[in-house]
Image (cartoon, rainbow, N blue to C red; front, side, top):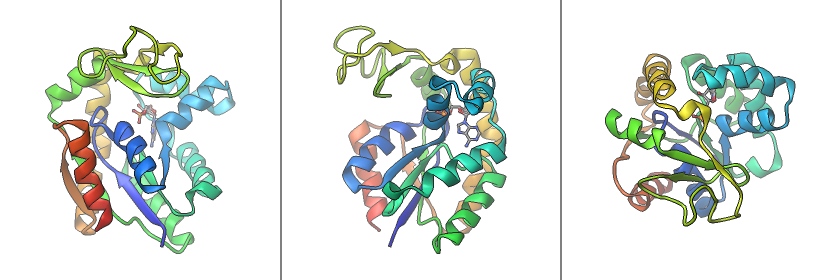
Length: 216
Ligand code: AMP
């Protein structure tokens, strides 16, 4: 049976990093709405042009556009075994849409790991983050620097700092997360699907805890 995992956690909690690893370990597809929007921006699509101005300010892209984008992505063949949703759903409207979307596929959300990281650590993590333009791999100036400054170890492409990873925008994104996304913690807890994961530990320890949760 297909598995649908919703990874919860604030920006900087490590959702993207962990989802990349879990995808390799489990064969589930990784759907990151942030990455999908960044692809639209790179391709200069209509959605990308709209998303860019909102994302740069740390604001959300409208629900209807975001939901339609996920619906299309989740219907593709590589999602047959299930998916890891990263950055979606991000508010109660999107959570209800997720339920409807999966019900229509004869399924439902399987489990919701919630990666918990203290706010001071989040700010430190996000403001030192550098991303590869080509592979999307994420580095950190202090915790996981690339071998050569500004260059991706994996593919040699250039690294860049996301416009929304500057300190002011990071603080705004964390505020918006608290207001709009944190209600999902109770939403999934009430359904008995939430599993709390300690996120302020080494990457491989977090992966181990997540894999144990997914196996249950
Ligand atoms: P992320 O890569 O998950 O940190 O997302 C980066 C930005 O993309 C967010 O700050 C939002 O502007 C936008 N975004 C990503 N996912 C969503 C979503 N589910 N709903 C609305 N906007 C989103």
